[in-house]
Image (cartoon, rainbow, N blue to C red; front, side, top):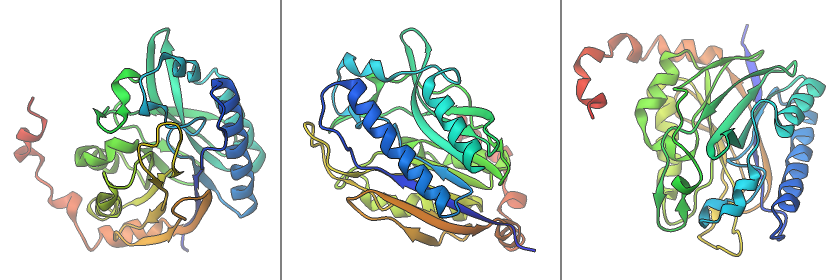
Length: 288
């Protein structure tokens, strides 16, 4: 019997022009909660937000006011809110947040909440970019230090890579070796910089590692920075690297796909990448 899981990817346009951090955070959080409710109504068993869903992509500037976005995990209010939603709808929730570890030490973090509302853990973004135009992430985030965890949820084994991480194939393989059946990549990426890679890298990661991938990108342009158009087009890819459903380009959207997790075994029995890999020959990959 097939093990079919219905997934949802939430892409959310910036819905507040306020310069008040608290106002923006509330507006975006309320919008994402509404999207989670809609995804649940459509039968989603697991849903993932875009990167740093509770605000704009504030890394477009270097401004300490955005430090006000941070929360403790799992003791902060947004984690508790996601737990309540997950429990209410019996839906696994993956949410991307700005985490405070200790005062002055902050991470770009995704949490995983099981369908009974229990907090399973978090993944901290490993690779932190700092480059033109307007990706000043080292001003805001310390590099992640939790490795590549895979969480055993009610619907399956879930990993999370975050935005810029997707350019590093080593992590994708680590998730596979750690047992992932689906890996989400909540992102904020703009046209003209990485769009040509958007459907190349993550479909290849799904095929190379033989699991499902959920790729989420925010949509639209964000004033006053206007660093480019966040081009949406969130999608699921199956273990053959084929795109399932795809989201709109510049608008809010909820991308729903049914994924048969038994397909992972089927494809791995044909493409024996895990059997035939030669880790003893890969020393150069991990050399400084």
